[in-house]
Image 1 (cartoon, rainbow over the protein chains, first blue to last red):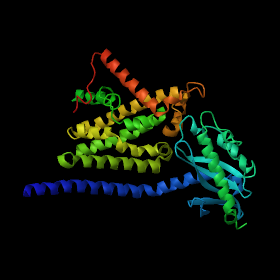
Image 2: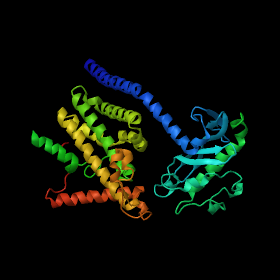
Image 3: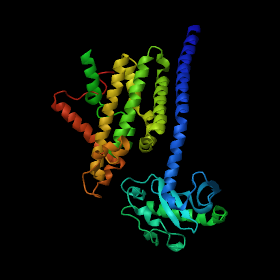
Image 4: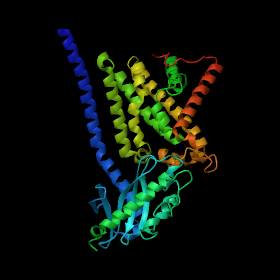
Length: 202
Length: 223
């Protein structure tokens, strides 16, 4: 009985020592890498922002000028503002839609008149070769939204062609473009609903 | 001793190949072989984890008691995966953006665990390190070949985005084999993975039979 107990203690000690050892190694690596990882994450954010906010309309760093607002679905949306000489010239924020394979995350850039400066897909789970044409590196489909706004086309035409709207779906995929168009529209609605607080300081 | 090392190399790369012979690690094999580049990246990351964890287990094998060996192995593999994940995120960020989601999958890959249990827990340090490296490379080659076949038939390209993974110097690898939009979509979807992996297993066995070796029994040599 006693020997059995001792063995149990030994197994526990072996396992405990390994946990402690690797825990230390991981803690050390985390310390070593956390600064670089944070820097890379910031660069990523700046990159995705620079794709939807042209450099010519701001002299600030939009990543630093942010604001959190709740959207219609009570979700926290971080809004990044671009300014030229202190005046808000545009905003960028994420919008969410549902595609064939789950959630599609978009980054929208909107200028102070409510026109789209650009739209990019940040993440999606759509079918490779079909639904992934929403990525800007696979196809230029997503670029067609630049310059559009809630009045142009009229609100009831903000749909894919199959639903009586004006946007092309692509061969073999309707659900994906439908999800993207809806996400962009809901992003523009969000902008319209919060316009006052977004560009209040102008 | 020299023949011993040769045996380990041959086992890893061909005779006892993790994917094509032992059929281990099917989860990343199916998920990551939509292109040759993805397969290559996933394979290399797995190889690093396998070499490191094999080495560690061989080093500590006298300390690891029989009863707690499985949790310790899992701990070691998980720690190695986390190390790779953190360092890649910090210092190889472009590559991390391509592979990041899948690095964590290595923990669920049974191939590293199988090699720890079947090989590294019984063999000397150098042998275990070699086994980890070459089993990992065998895994890499299988994934790259499956990925290449699926990519050529499915999207008509080969090694697309290889320069993202390996650096701009490897831009020459990126090829378009078939004209755009002629790909057979099913090959990029999950069924294509099973089809290609199955056909490659058959091809390997035919080659082995032709070579007069008969069909290798999975794990027969080292278990």
